[in-house]
Image 1 (tube, rainbow, N blue to C red):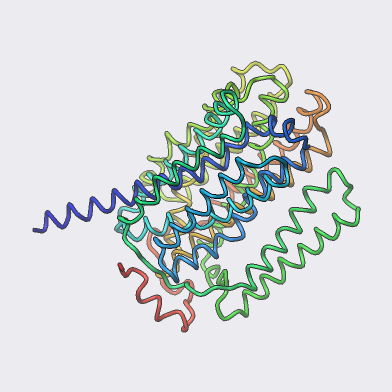
Image 2 (cartoon, rainbow, N blue to C red):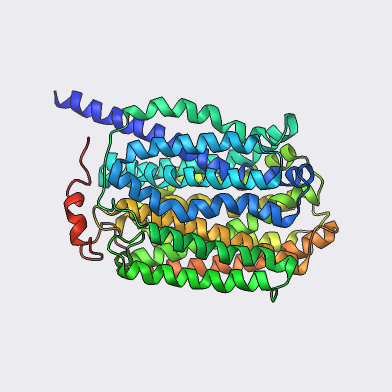
Length: 483
């Protein structure tokens, strides 16, 4: 009888890993599937750098802002139920993006797509965490990280292959069958709720307005001038909005982001490391992916295949990163991971020229890719370990939001540096801007490696590092309840 129960539990666990892993793969793939299509979109829809930045940032901005709301909705109404709703939104928005006939419509569809992804991503991790015994989280998160890494690895290749063989619209159509297949499979995943189930609409508005203003200013500053009225309004107004959001979180009865979470040094530093990693790495990827097509003349598929030494490494390394963190400690693995990323990006900044042979790009590609693969599972483990019981959903949402904000600001800031130093006028002009931007990205990643060494070596969820408000304690008691 005990063996039968154990087999049933193992079966449910494996099913949860499959469903959450496939959903994570789809969302991760969509982060990069558009990258190799950007040069084609630029020509087909008649846009420039600003339009391309918003094609990426519209997705990542709504993703980042709504992650915590997605986690809270799952905690309140049921993670499985809300996860399914997010999947419907993501799938429908993918179809809308595929049907776009102008850059404005595409950007709007990408924003809605980001909202769906903001629901799927944190709940995939909390559904998995609820199904896995704490002592096995390292391995389970490693598998979860591998699926995310596989999406990152195949995104540029799939995007390139689709653009070459059909058209850029099909990079969005491919999400539709995946979403339709996953919807009926979700029913077998067990339901759960958490302790942070109240909504904070004021916080959502302040965060959205503030972050939009900052990103708007960064994106338009290079082309419209940093002292122009709209840019200054965006930067200053956005900054005020972000400060107002923080002030509101300190006094709100049901805060979107409970500031008490950050009383834990481990949680605070882990989020800081996540932000810096995304800023330096993904800001560099945005420009590097265009380099192979815009400057070196590769087709989208050829460019995607040639980035595999970079993008495939995370999928190969991630399954082992969680177990490695269990053995030698999270902070050591994270410091090594970030140092490898910094070295890889700095190497690219040094060797990149319009006529650089592809073979010279492979070693830094591999170095940066291995660093990425070593990063994701240990940082997820750190965030979960330093989150108080019952607040895992908010902690997951916070970590993912921090990463997406780093991505948004990294693309905007490094894009601004690229525009100030170089541009699309010629291959050399592009390389001049890209090298300076990547050098800045490498410095940021090196700083993140040093910061990772400050993370405490604590492999168990601390008690007393954050306090769940009394009004939430009733729902917290049922955080692990299976409905």
